[in-house]
Length: 331
Ligand code: SF4
Ligand code: SF4
Image (cartoon, rainbow, N blue to C red):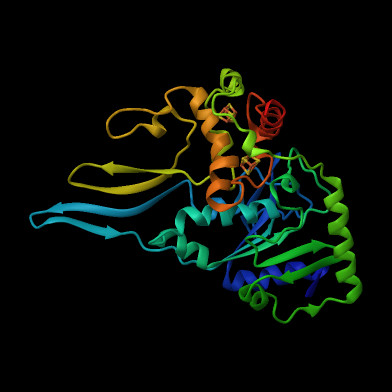
């Protein structure tokens, strides 16, 4: 394990910025946003950013996959160049780092998605443990994670006051920390105590996904309030739905991948024209079943990392924690 003195942090980030595109948390107006190092003022006291930073880099809101043009010999297809910029995301919260592991499951199928893979392979993720949660409405301990869990990280940082304990989790994490001072036993002990304290600060509730009833009244009740804006999925660090759109004409154009959400009516329309989720009730139910039941049945873990963004940012205050508690009580 290594140690980063706070007064040396700027020098370290500068060194990394010679080789990598370094993304750091910054205060931008009223919110925290991950920006390129060297611009906005860095803020490592932040709670969490509005946008999940790793998802935004790995699967941008929109990206061109290929361009096409018709010719007398047929269509010419030109795949877009892969984005192989070397990046470091510095200071991402543990929930957001775990979120990218969930998104990996979408893009690392057979065959893997080359566009996603190029960015993922070239990005080093340096996470920052949460010493004083909860922030807003987060609940990571209820979904099997913690304020210092290391899923998805190359390095875990813990703020010790005067500096950070830096724990490498992968070979590339070790590589990027090379040359730093070795941490002392007392620093390691202090980090452990901070982790234990942070665990105690979070209230844990039990998610009983076996009690989820497809025909329960709760889906209709929540659907009456939901305005179908999709914020809860767009800003979710583990949601990865997208759609493909042709931009151009039949002669020339490009294929673009853009974020999509199961909360929009057109999302589920099948080629026949049938829509299995025509009403908001089915769409609200789908989000919750997908997050807490289907993913669990398939992968043995929730597709929710407990970041709390959907709770905080839903314009009509729909709260997944309340829904899952009511499901449990009704079950
Ligand atoms: S479902 Fe809500 S709390 Fe869970 S990871 Fe997504 S935005 Fe965060
Ligand atoms: S953020 Fe709230 S209102 Fe918007 S789609 Fe999600 S649950 Fe519905």
